[in-house]
Length: 114
Length: 337
Image 1: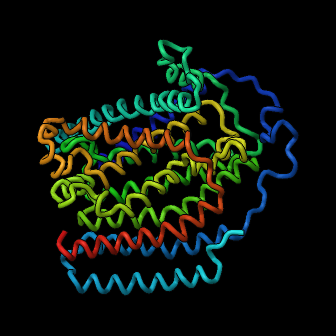
Image 2: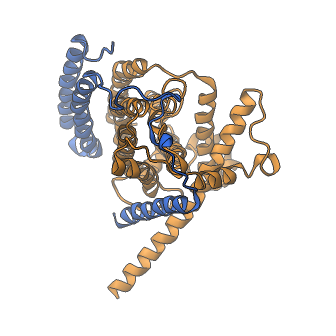
Image 3: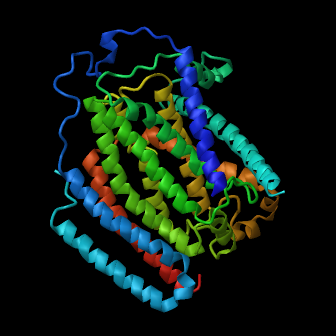
């Protein structure tokens, strides 16, 4: 784990150094027009934070369920031989249950994006 | 003595990091060049030719240009998040390289949860894109960031599930174990029994790297430049560097998980024995280059997917297919393959 953390740290430092180099080397000619959000050259209309569709949240909820499924499959996959047929049948039941939820979500139109 | 050993250990790690960093940054820079050249040729153009012989110094010129460009921070932006987002993307894109073996005995961090760390790092890198898009205070950036979020939610499950098949086959999260398992297995590589998983993983890898045909978060014909619209100077460069590094991470992952990494399948060696003398790093390099070329090739060939098409493909096709692949692998393994 230590080498992994050192790598992360090194790259954080390296990235920061490059950004500082950018700060030092780059010219700075402030102009108020440079600091407004880009909207094809026209003055921006309304705030930048536009409302977005509630579907994003719905998809996130379904994602959570299936992501947990994947998380449960991983440890089982690692000790597959040890658990033999017992584990195999149990995971099959688990997957079938989730498939039912998946089919239900599909039939309710949760996966439909209009 | 203990502190002395620790010091040596850290020194060794630093040397390894320097080697990997040198190789990967050079590759990333020249992949940009290769991409421009290849796409240029595919579109009957020449690509870069001006800087140096055949335009070979173009990546260096680009780097210098990015370093000397003004770093503009829009007034509307959430300053702190806006400043940190590129660092998050770059760091988590690169940190994945530390758990990928480049040679049977060359790996920075030989941990036994390699694949889990890569999945975690890849997911965290997306945070940088979402935060960068959200914090810019521009409509295009916000939409780019949101698309990225929805894209992650869609491809991450099939990605994880197709990898579950690979993990199941080797019964390990360690990439070197997975490679060794394939070398000893009946088929010689996972891509043959797990062809479905491989196709799913390949599609998800394109989505993961935000490359065409799934470059929706930055779709330049619809969203100007998506989440990078408001970024300039080296901050923008960092997003692009991260993209090219993650192409290498995903190519390495594909090669290690499905094509036996630095090994060649046993049946190929029986048919053509002289292949035994090809050095391991060369085998790995050729395989990785092929997939990097594939990334570029696909960009030149396929039009961009529409947003809802990507979502429904991931949810309605890739998830059932990857689950099917998983069950096939489980049955095969029970059956003794």
